[in-house]
Amino acid sequence: MAYKFDWGVLLVYKHLLWQGLVLTVQLSALGMVLSLALGGLIGLGRRAEARPLRWLCGAYIEFFRNIPLIVQLFFWYFAVGLEAFPAAVIGLTVYTSAYIAEVIRSGLQSIPRTQIEAARSFGMTPYQVIRHVVLPQALMRVIPPLGVEFINVIKNSSIAMTISITELTFQTQQIESLTFRGFEAATAITVLYVLLALAIVLLMAAIERVVRLDLRLG
Amino acid sequence: MDLRVIAENLPYMLTGLQLTVILSLVSMAGSFVGGAVFAMLRLSPWWWLRWPAILYIDIVRTVPLIMVIFWAFFLMPVLTGHATTPVKAALFALILFNTSYMAEVIRAGIQSIPKGQVEASRAIGLSYLGSMRHVVLPQALRNMSPALVSRFIALFMGTSLVYIIGVTEFFRAANNVNNRVYRSYEIFGFVAIVYFVCCYALSLASTALERRFAVPDGGGGETRAVAGALGRLSGSDLRRPE
Image 1 (cartoon, one colour):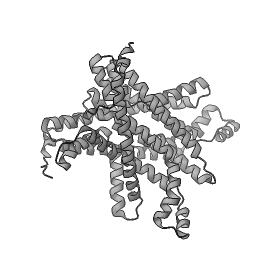
Image 2 (cartoon, rainbow over the protein chains, first blue to last red):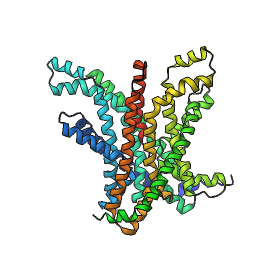
Image 3 (cartoon, each protein chain N blue to C red):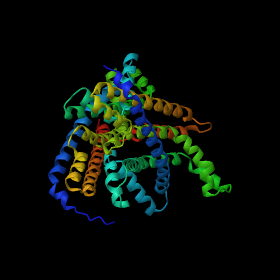
Image 4 (cartoon, helix red, strand yellow):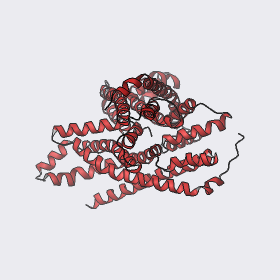
């Protein structure tokens, strides 16, 4: 291998790396919060009494997770004509919420109907059943797969570079075209992505611990 | 709405779709082989085989596919000493990326077969490879099949990202048409529908396989639990391309 490494370029262009990191974190954080809210509602809708609502939520999930995210982003950006950042946030949210809805639905489904019936026959109100029987158990089951989805949000936010968002992956290309040091740039940015994923793993572990403690007390 | 642009450019876009299918099939085959190797390395009793495999599988799965595509594009010339074609780099990246997911699918499949079966087949005189070939793999493949279809869907959608290194697959072909005629609604709407029809049909096949193999004859609770675990993997984690 005749290639000579020059890690100095990373220091010279650290402002680009920083800018990319900030955008990736902003985009991912917004995507996570919004798609958790939307996905949670749609996941609940999948378990609703009304059949049309169930069907509608199912159709939403199947539709948005079977179209590549890049196609969806291009649709929001070029066809609908949104600004780049809102298009990226909306595209990422709609796409991820379909997956999160499935996580929520399977979490709710994992609680046997008999438990709900038993709780009802004790005289608990529907609200109490949800609050004290369904939610605590579902929450514990939903946390690990949610962590996976959150890591996917970070990974998927890279696709926003195709609609001119200057996030981390975009900066790889930027530094490579400025310096021809694609190798060094790609290494640094790969490490940043691994660290971000690690942060999510640690965050979810902390949340799981808090929830578990909370359940034991309550 | 002007659907004529679609009709007029259909042959060109279908050539792109053809490349999308070829890229998906070739990289699926490649990553199946790669995944099988890494699954076996990961299940190896020796730590010096196991650890590198775990490291590879877990790191690649936290990196976006676009980054892996860049890696392939920047790395291959350095390793091989001469420039590569975009299609080769795309295949290399897709296989590199998907191998890590396939390794986990195949590992789950192999682990879904109770250890007792291997011990029993060894006890009646089958060799290690014989017990793999005649006892473990046929059943493991059957248990894995829904997850394999899900991986294929993810791969099929993932091929749209190689557009950034200039491979004229379906998405790039459609994008080229749009750059010329500037009919974003029609073109990207059409692209979305084509991807949806292909992927949804495949996902129906995956569900059908799951239902068919959920309770194999004489499998009992254990196999059902495994099918559930594989279903979970195929449902969220293993589905995603990016």
